[in-house]
Structures are given as C-alpha cells and as structure tokens.
Image (tube, rainbow, N blue to C red; front, side, top):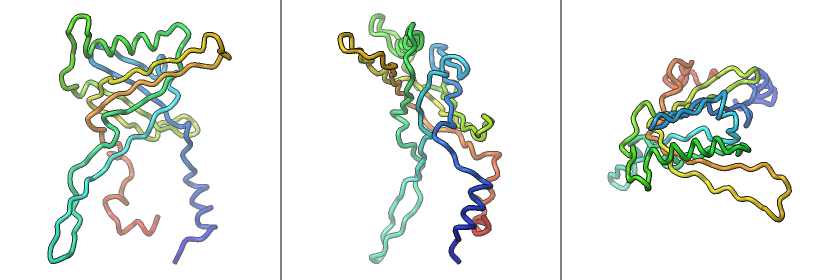
Length: 195
C-alpha cells in the first residue's frame, strides 16, 4: 500500500528535516602544523558540503544481457573540496591559509611538504540538530590545500559589501560516519518496509 499524507506527516513530525545551516566545519589539520579550530578561525566558514561517495558500476555481458556489478568506491569532488569563508578585516584567516599553502610548496625556497598526506591531515565536519548537538561527524582523511581564491575589491564603486573567499582542498576518502549509528536497515533490508 502507498504511504498516505497522514503517514508522511506523522514521520516528518517525529524525524524533522535537516536544514542547510545545521552544519559546521569543526577542525582542519594540514601539513606543516597548520591547525584551524571550529571555535576560532572556522567560525568564519560560511558554506561547505556534505561530501559524496559512490560505488562504481562494472558491467558483465553475457548472451545479450548486461549485468551490473559493484566496483570500487569513489569520492566525487575529493580533488576539489571547497569551503567558503568570510574574509576578516585583519586578513588573519587568509594569511594562515597562505602559510599552509606555502608549507606544501614554497616557490621562493623550492621546498615543501608535497608528499602524500597521511591520516593526521584531516578536515572534520559536523552535522548538528536544532539544539546544536552533533548528530554526525564526517572526517575527510588525507586533506591538503589546493587553491585559495582571489578576493575582488571595488575601490572606486564599493558599497561596503562583506567579502568572502574560497579555499579548495583535496582528500583521499572520508571515514565511515555510520559506524556506531543505528544503521540496522542498511545491513538488513527486510526491515526497510517497517520504517
């Protein structure tokens, strides 16, 4: 039997809805000892994404029939994960990201830490509820800085607009945030109908 409006209403009032602002950038740890904290510098984070994860599809053909077989996992966008920040007046945040970028490779010294980032290089994201309690934590592993956006200024025609800039990172994968959660339905599809 198809679900009813009343059933949807009942489930929606119990489970509620995630909102676009119930998300925080909690911690960023990069090579060179650059650490950004969610209670300090990262309060200026204004937008970020809950990352994607895919299982690639592999085809096996036999007698005119195509069968779909799961392949390797992939993390779309892991080569260009972007966080947008407010630009603080004293440019402290931009300067710190500049230092992190030059720790990876400094063209003035020809030195840098441009090896493969390890498990200590992370970006930690937090999904929160309306009482600001964490309901999920996503840790991007092997994070390293890639791009720091330009910041446009309008000296002659400026209106006092608040300035923002983006920083792009790469990462290898993210940790399984469903571990420890009640994900019985994911491992036992027979109970999906009961949800």
